[in-house]
Image (cartoon, rainbow, N blue to C red; front, side, top):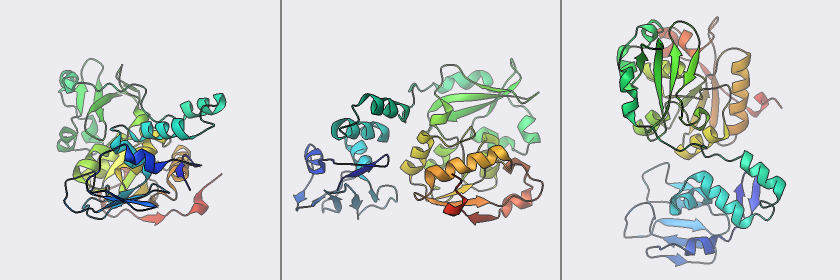
Length: 316
């Protein structure tokens, strides 16, 4: 057996990798490591890792996210690096064809880490500490806007929507013109496709049971304002990095709520292709003449109809 990584089984020497780290009250029993949890302090061992598959369980954990997981997640924790970096480490160490030129090129294309890792100081948002009625006219209250630090740039006459990562660190911000549909992002910010707008709220409030996925920030905030957890892709498809964020944070159920048009259908298919089999999937049933979530009435938002997504919905 081996570790399943990017659709390929990689023959990892799991016991050797784990033996590089200090364990408390460990016991190596053939195909299993039993020890005190590496994620918290405890006196009696409740952690066990299968040395053939790398799948681990922490029976004493009270966290759904850290109660069990795969070997890559464990290695990322132990190596104090991202999930993607742990993946690359395993590939570079154990995958014989990863060093091949063509596979290396493929691996580079599949790299999930942001190219720019710089986090921006929140002070950069101070020049936009103004309000504008634009979003209120679209149904977002002043309270909702303040909660996510939405501002206004008088110089460009644009709403400013900060993007933060899942830990709440500023990575970029979006300018949305109040006079037309033009938008742009801050210079020197991270790529939006490496983040999910609103994910920091999901993590902070521990709202992992059900999360709506939409395309735009305004749709996501519309759902939050009406009591539903939501993240926005900021684009027309779910990227590999965004997929990783969904799986890493332990979201259990995704409700697809992309726009009710051709682009929204394409976005929906990207979500299904990347997440089918990994999390429970459902999709909203659009009321008549509704293009997106922001078009829903208050009554419709309070009682959104959904249906399960089966593999038959997947268009090849």
